[in-house]
Image (cartoon, rainbow, N blue to C red; front, side):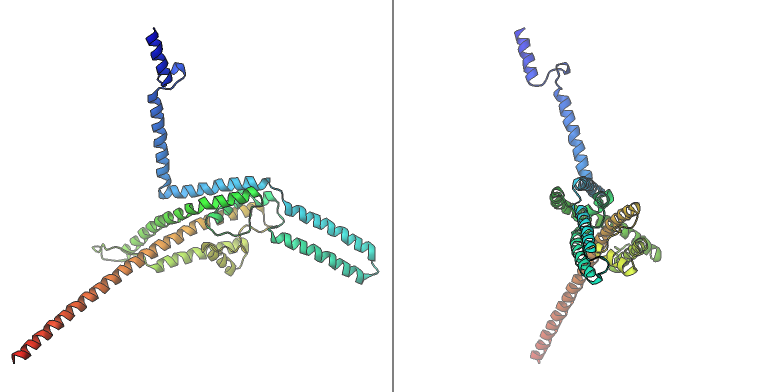
Length: 350
């Protein structure tokens, strides 16, 4: 009995008791750990694929948008309260000016009223410089706007029309940029590879249909002019779309598309920033601008990959031609030397 109790105690201490004692058998534990490891490996493998990187970037922006929306909506709208305070103070001062001069003294009333209005104008101008646009925090930090804000961080566009006002939002912006920039670089590389492969396949099919030679299976290189035409068509589409929606002229729409795709982002023109437009319409424009930017940056990566491949092929051809030219020059030089030696021998024989 003592031996059996001792064995039972050892089994309890080692975790080998049956499930009725409240312990899990080691085989089940190992099986559970192996299952978790396999799931983690599959998730990591998927995230390292080209589709997984795109899904990871979208998930990263969605999570960031939710967190930024939650943090910034908790903050107080200081600019709105300041504008309201200045407005009320200006009304009181104007009333005091009216009571002081009455209607008879127009010149004195005009001078004092101009002083009050200029002071109010300077205060309001300073507030507008800090990003105030007559909207509340709930109207500014909607989910589509926060989504576009997160994309502008990781793509380094930085429109500047939305900035975090809370301390938590500023700290999160720095951390979000540190982890988001490498993810965007990985997305830029992978999406360029995907789009380049698709465009090469389309170009190859068009090229094979337009040529009659079926036996020629040489490697087809997409010319850089085709890439430039794709970018031109994409910018033209965006310019027409934004000019219709935002009522911009065509030059401003083209200017916005080029500066955004080149990741300049001055912030002077931003879709969905019209205060007088409907809120639902603005959110739709922001979402479409998000998709336009995401797809456009992928097309730029595609053109970069295709133009790099064309440059590499042309440099290799130039290198081969140069080596062939050197070889021909060497052969001709050796032939001239041999001929010169033969002529010298014949001359010495005479």
